[in-house]
Image (tube, rainbow over all chains, first blue to last red; front, side, top):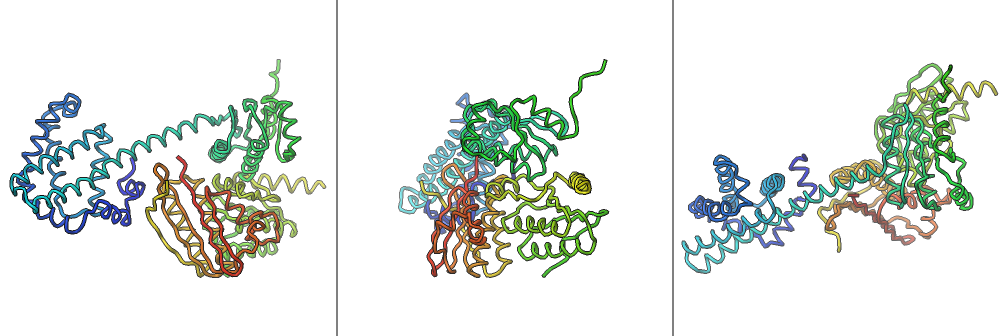
Length: 308
Length: 125
Length: 138
């Protein structure tokens, strides 16, 4: 799991971004001072609000009730929640604050709390604290200002919460993409220092680049002297594909290894020559079998029939 | 000129230079000078340049390396470049720089074996 | 959708050492944005080529590094500005085939292939501005 600091960087939570958010949510120093001033008010009503929140809402819904397996868990959650909401009135909304919110959001996301519950909690808190505020201070210009400040910090928080969920989703997507890439370029170790990559399907520029990178990584990892690229399963081999293969071969040579291209059908041979692709630098064979024999001889071995 | 930054070792008739640090232009040029001087002094037949430690090779350094190989050859020494990293190889070919004229090998051992092969076939000629 | 700039960093190039500093800053930025070793190497090499061009041909220039975010993708954009001699024939310089076109020629066309977006503006006698952008692959 990445550290929170790495996560902050990934999400772009820099000083510059912080300033931009303060401006965007219109969260001013005045608001923060007002919130700090409201802290004792918040403390007075905090326990009651959070308990009401749990009793009236969370425990009444079967979905959310599942999260609280026992009294101890419930108590822990409520304590954490109380502290969390009081933080809204800390009077600061700096990078540390953002990091705290981020950490909590990430935890919720990780344990499987759906966004609607996490965001819903803010909505309910806002409603409950507003009622208490108007109850205490009456409906005045002052109390309206106070509500606005509370709203601002809550929206500021919610943006961070939403982003943790999006980031987690993107992370998951990235992992899936990486897995798909791995699966579509299965580099196999045939013998010591001999690798095989059977290419199947169309090779566009993106895939070609990815193939080259996988090949290079594997060659160094296994310290392979030869890699056999079998293109029998590639339906179309035009100039672009041929050049990609050439490029990969050149890169493999730079590492100190050789490439053997196999699975070259008569049509492909015709295409490559007609297109003027310079194959002098590549070892090529029609079939995988022949390619394998060549690869073995390049690594000082050969296949012999058993004696007797 | 900061010469002597990259140590050049002798293994029999072969020189081995391992580049561990990132190369700025002037140090690359100094390296070339040092190598050629070492070839002259040691009368070596082979040179291995180990670039396992380089995580970036730009066109300037690439040219210095290929030129050094060519210069060494004029002085009777074959050069083998070893240990290039995958991302360096990928970047060079994407830029269109395939370092023709330089022998390559996976590592120092392979490099020594290749030099032995080259030198024995040369002896036969 | 226009990309959002998450951070900006300016660096001056007035010596060979500065080119090395720019290279390190770009690498650090690429790593922070989560580029893999291939992406990072491509970006760092491109930045070194362009930074060197400033030092070799103009002796002084400005480099602006930006972290970008574009909805789903994260990226890095680097701009290289100088008031040097400029490039009289950009097409010729970009073609890069001519070996006597000096290191400048090969650097540019090769560099373009390392990045996702490459913008070059230059006027003879006025200066050059090159802007490269690379997005982190998913």
